[in-house]
Image 1: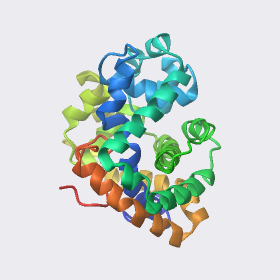
Image 2 (image 1 turned 45 degrees about the vertical axis):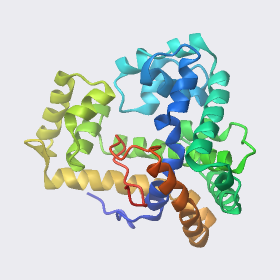
Image 3 (image 1 turned 135 degrees about the vertical axis):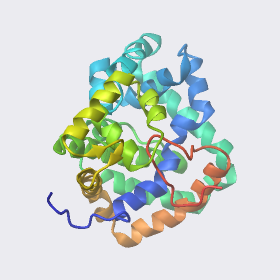
Image 4 (image 1 turned 120 degrees about the vertical axis):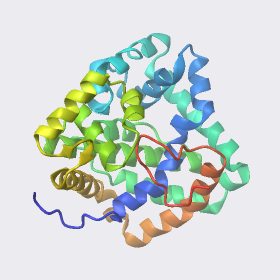
Length: 296
């Protein structure tokens, strides 16, 4: 296993992701977003999720969405796509998601906070970082960066983090491919690493019990897990995947510099605390994300 320089749990790109991701995640966790989709005719959580996240790609087929999102079972995706595009075009979902995020952030944070100089400053730094994010080989990041920027600072902040998190996610897929982990295997290994409820994660991502068991068997044959727990080799693979993910997500942070990155983390901390306190972020989430601010 090749050692990757700077591979620590406190890598600066991971720190910024942990600091900003709850701002973006309101699009998945706030009720305004699903309600807006249901007004168009979507049913259940997954139709709104796939419509809102995939809309920057255009009317993408299920095969493309499953390929880019990586760890969702293709059958789960196919139950929502292309049906969502028959209800409304991607442009409508893009308008809708920005309106819904605006409503959610106004409810969670209040107009006074959103209009503050601190939010404007955070938005400016985050935008600079997003504009510096490399998008070659990163389709989800590129698709979001190609969209028109919103005007309101709190929506600029949200859009910037959307670009940055998709850029990180695209790099994470590259790291999984480099490690030779298929979608189901990646989830099984991830669940073991985070001591996550594997059954909950399996159902959340749409894999059958047989597919999950087969993935675990393949990992066991490679010496990466044993009786559901990571082996030393499995821990090394997981560490390398995360280190490569951090390294691939680092250029935007390097571009704005350490001082600006630290300033951004400080500026968004009160916003994230308020979002979490108002129930706008799920502490138990499939990302295994631990925000930088305490979850109370």
